[in-house]
Length: 92
Image 1 (cartoon, rainbow, N blue to C red):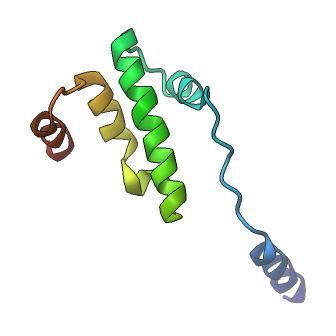
Image 2: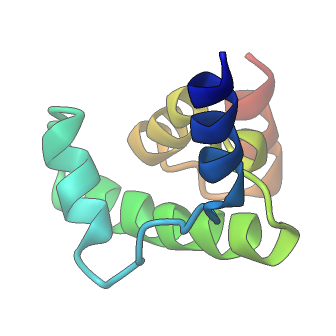
């Protein structure tokens, strides 16, 4: 029992470090998620991916709480040009 408690204590002392974000992070995610996007859609995806990461770090939250993966992909695919279209992509 003491060994389990000591391992738990040691684990709790470790600080979680979010993976480093770099310019190619969106490409790694797109490949990992097997996304097939047109160049314009990939540009939207890259911008949203970077924005989501920045906001999550600023708020000290997980990226899924800022913009879930499903909605991120849907926005990139739809590439809405106006605010109303963006809201419709998120709500539906």
